[in-house]
Amino acid sequence: MQLDPIQESAAQDRRVRRSRSALMAAAVRLVSERGTTDIAVTDLAEAADVSRRLVYLQFGDRDTLLTEAAIDLVRRELLPQAGGGGDVSEGVAALARHFAEHRAFYRPMLTGSCAFAMTATLNRLFGSLNRSAVRKLFGELDEKTADDLSEFVAGGAATLVNNWVIDGTEPLDPEELTSRLLRLASAITFRRPGPTDGDHLR
Image (tube, rainbow, N blue to C red):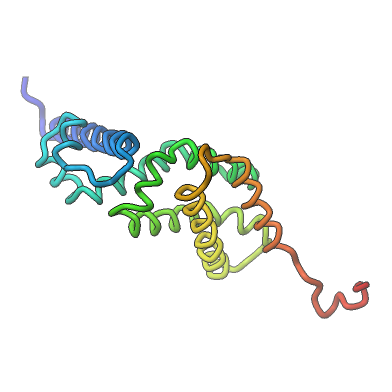
């Protein structure tokens, strides 16, 4: 029985999603096992049980595949825990646990051929996660200020997380990073008295 064009297109979309998913899972596994991003496209294709040609068709090159695998890992495992708009400390703790658990993958991603793309990706990730936290910590802000402050905070947070993942003592302690990030959040949200508060200074 022949599929109609709509059914055929849906089946093809499912195959594309399956092959992309298999390639990204293979990328995370191989980078974690080998501790490097210097992995041949042939190895990635074989681990995902797809052709080399398919890697180039779907991702263009190896480093794009590796970066997309990192984004996929964050979307699947971190965002559902950290991006739900709940308590800020819970989101920070989820972030620290995620990077500690997947250090074997993120460390080579942050030091190898994907380092620039990976850092930019993390900055965007932290920026998006920070938006709700910034509003909670700083109160009502106009849209532009909230976006700028989210990016500003994201850059600093990303630097701390990057350095912790790359140089932190093994095994990484998620509670230690959580505590550091929350102390910083408290420090930057400390409000000094304004001119109209002068009578209350001691």
